[in-house]
Length: 132
Ligand SMILES: *[C@@H]1O[C@H](CO)[C@@H](O)[C@H](O)[C@H]1NC(C)=O
Ligand SMILES: *[C@@H]1O[C@H](CO)[C@@H](O)[C@H](O)[C@H]1NC(C)=O
Image 1 (cartoon, rainbow, N blue to C red):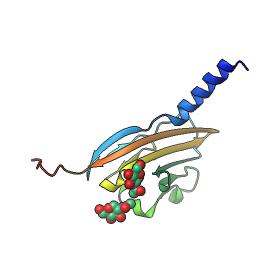
Image 2 (image 1 turned 45 degrees about the vertical axis):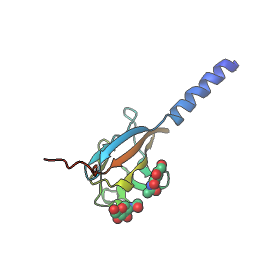
Image 3 (image 1 turned 135 degrees about the vertical axis):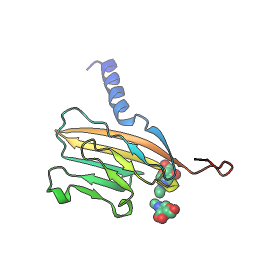
């Protein structure tokens, strides 16, 4: 293979794998939704959201029976919504320590789609009292 072509192919692969996560900002207590990127018409085997590369938030298995399709990790129960049609993850009451890297992944048809977000949850500014 022509070395120039090999290099550009490698660059293209690195680009899809190592593209920087998108930054997302949320206010403490204000729900925020992370959008899952997907390939059109991909038949999904499983989808997942993982926090800080180590902690599962939710896993979704559309081909399992209904009661076992969506599995939310205990510490996220009541704090997140997983949307089955879009695979988006909504944090309904984010706290400062929910800040970090969220990686969404879909596998299906031998393909993988990955979405990465760096979430920053900001507290209220101590010197300003918002009026509603
Ligand atoms: C985040 O902070 C809350 C209290 O503000 C605490 O209950 C929760 O366990 C903390 N979560 C983590 C992952 O440290
Ligand atoms: C998640 O990772 C970020 C850095 O990427 C770190 O600041 C934060 O403390 C981590 N959060 C938890 C709960 O481990």
